[in-house]
Length: 126
Image 1 (cartoon, rainbow, N blue to C red):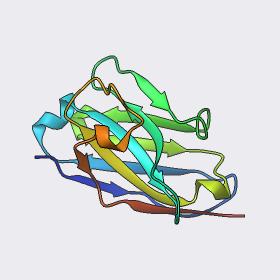
Image 2: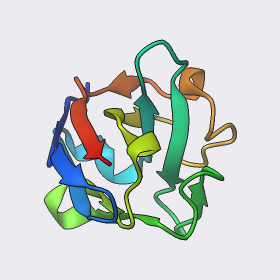
Image 3: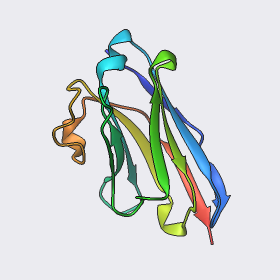
């Protein structure tokens, strides 16, 4: 069993930066694929970024590519999402997710993931 706890959300102005953290429990985390999704009010959950355990291979959603960076520290059982050049359209609840399958065959699909955190709110003011 894996438990995920996100932190680092908050209110930031357009153009600002935030770093989200996702702390995971369980030794098996080190072999899991990890992803970040976000959901704005009235919208579907949107893929943001993902990282595999081996390689690692990294994937980004089109709307955040070149602005966001995902990374992981297996020693700390933590995944990070560095968000730069934030825009009002980045406002959403951000969720961390873990996939028991380390290769993330369908990394952009919420159904790929087995465990989810409770989410952290990110609000970007214009």
